[in-house]
Structures are given as structure tokens and as C-alpha cells.
Length: 350
Ligand SMILES: *[C@@H]1O[C@H](CO)[C@@H](O)[C@H](O)[C@H]1NC(C)=O
Ligand SMILES: *[C@@H]1O[C@H](CO)[C@@H](O)[C@H](O)[C@H]1NC(C)=O
Ligand SMILES: *[C@@H]1O[C@H](CO)[C@@H](O)[C@H](O)[C@H]1NC(C)=O
Ligand SMILES: *[C@@H]1O[C@H](CO)[C@@H](O)[C@H](O)[C@H]1NC(C)=O
Ligand SMILES: *[C@@H]1O[C@H](CO)[C@@H](O)[C@H](O)[C@H]1NC(C)=O
Image (cartoon, rainbow, N blue to C red):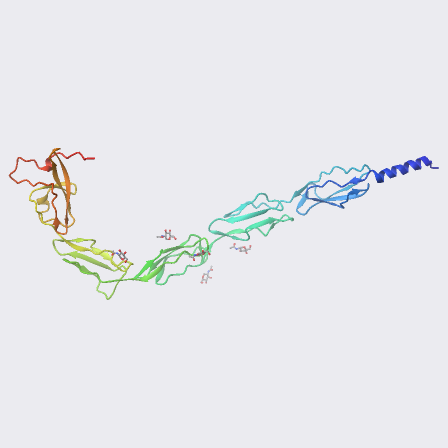
């Protein structure tokens, strides 16, 4: 026999269970999904937490909870952590830019100069924990065999990988005889995999050199004179060559110099002590055969007030030799006079 009171009481309990002790909407867990999602759950109903793609729970697997009669969800310690892709912090001959290697981050790559990216410049850590696309490599830049300029030969060249060259490898060219080089004779393999600008070889002719007055010029007995041909100059006696003895046909089609013959100088002073190449010499003895064009001496002059001596230069220029005005020549008989070269030098006036 069941007491009516007991029936009433159990009816009351049942009412409390369904009306008062439902579970609320469960707490959200970062990067996890709850199913099913409702605004309340009856006791005995189940929910499942699953980590979102790219995240894994610390303990592994999913978490299932049942709404208890108390209407309070059990404490949920689930943590969904991002997947970590394999370490990718080092790129040989290049560099990797990254913050972390976790889902869903991107990392990017650059190669050192002379290397190029074989692959993409960035990759993403996928939900599966793999790099996508696959990690690149930095491959060395190569240049194909260099072209050879017209009228040139390769004087230095050696391929370094198979038939190709590496970044900064060089090749050197030389022009055939009679041809002059315009541009750099050395080319190098650039970081772009091409060569720097090729030089050009051009045929260059020079006119016949003209004979200098009071002298002569010799050059090869040929129909035409070309780049690098040489001519030599000389002067008749007492004349001095002004310029180099040998000249060369330049790449500009003219001669490296135009030497001329310059006259010597006769001396109009009989007695003078002068400085010649740093030494005191007697002018008339040292230059008894005259002075050559270009030769230079320093005369001594007197400063009467200060009773001291100073020097002034004079040079033989194509037959003309001007004695400095301050120079006083003494007669051989004026033995009591002191020559300027024997007077103490003046302090340099500064
Ligand atoms: C570039 O990458 C591709 C694919 O990974 C590979 O087959 C090729 O050999 C690589 N080339 C160089 C020069 O490293
Ligand atoms: C180099 O070039 C030659 C001639 O073109 C060719 O026969 C050879 O196979 C090449 N070698 C390499 C390593 O590419
Ligand atoms: C020629 O090129 C080489 C290498 O490419 C460089 O080092 C050199 O300075 C260049 N010379 C001139 C005169 O430009
Ligand atoms: C080499 O290639 C780079 C990049 O494509 C280009 O800018 C440069 O002008 C090229 N150099 C020569 C000498 O062709
Ligand atoms: C050769 O010719 C060039 C250009 O015409 C000129 O600048 C140069 O001075 C000449 N050289 C000589 C030694 O005359």
C-alpha cells in the first residue's frame, strides 16, 4: 500500500527536478566547440566539448559531461592549445621571420644575396600541424656561360658549377690586335643571374705622326697605323725633346703625346754662382755648352737694407733665358765686393 502522502511527495520531487534543476548554457572554452548547444539542459542530458581544428586538448580527446540533478555542470579543466608545426627557424643561406611556429601563424623567408628562393616566400602552419606550402630552400644564383664580345677573346673564365658560374664569378676579355676595348674588360655574374655589361672592341686607326721642327719621328712602315702602334721621336743636336721619346696610338685615335724639339739657351752672364738641383754650381762652368730647354737654376740676389740674400728662379724656355733683374754681376776686378751667394740668407718673410 502506498501512502497518498508519499505519492504527493515524490510528485513534488519530480516537479523540482524538471522545473528547478536544469543545467544552464555551458561555459565557453577558448578554441573548443560544445555540442549540442542549447539555452538549458535537463538532468541526464549530455554535452561534448571538442577542440576546434588546429587545436588539441592537453589531456587528449574530447570531454563529455552529463547534466547532474544539482543543475550545476562539473568543473571543466579542458584547455585547447594550438598545434605546433615542426621547427622552421633556420634557412641555410637565408633567414626566417617568425613569431611562433603555432597554428595558424605564417612565417616568411628571404635568401642572402647570391641565393634565390626555390619555393614560396611564406608558409602557413596548417590545422594538421604541417607547413604549407612546403618549406623553400635558398639555392645559389647561377649565370649561364657568358657571351663573348665581337673581336674579343676570353682571357680568364672558368665555369664553377657544370657549365655555369656563381654569383660574383668573373670573366675577362681582351680585344684582338688593332681593336681597343670600350667598357670594362671584366664582367661578373650578378645576383640576378645575368652578367654585367659586356665591353666592346672597336678597330682604331691613328693618322701618321708629323715630323717635329728640328727633329724626326720614326714609325712602322705600314699602310695604316692602328691602336697600340708606336712612334719614336728625336731632335737634332742642341735641341731637346719636349715630351716622351715614345708615343702610342690611343683608343681615341690620336697619339698619346705630340713631342716637339726645343732650342737650348746661350748664357749672357759670365760669372754667377747659382743653385742647380739643390747644389751650388758656377753657371758658366756647369753650362759651358749652353743650357737645355727646361733646365732651371736659382740666382742669388742681395737685399741691401737687411744685408741678406734671397734666390730667384730662371729657366731656359725654347732658347730664351731671362736673368732675374735683381741679380748683379760683379766685374772680375771688383774683388772687394761680396757676392750675393756668400751673404747670409734672409729670414723667410712670412
Ligand atoms: C627547387 O625545388 C624543387 C622542388 O622542391 C626541386 O626539385 C629542385 O631541384 C630545386 N632546385 C634547386 C636548384 O634547388
Ligand atoms: C656543358 O655544355 C656542353 C656543351 O654544350 C654539354 O655537352 C654538357 O653536357 C654541359 N655540361 C653540363 C654539366 O651541363
Ligand atoms: C670592372 O668590373 C669589375 C668587376 O665587375 C670591378 O671590380 C671594377 O671596379 C670595374 N672596373 C672599372 C674601371 O669600372
Ligand atoms: C640583369 O637582370 C636584371 C633583373 O632582371 C636587370 O634589371 C638588369 O638590367 C640585367 N642586367 C643586364 C646587364 O642585362
Ligand atoms: C685625343 O683626342 C681626345 C678626344 O678628341 C682629346 O680629348 C685628347 O686630349 C686627345 N689626346 C691627345 C694626347 O691629344
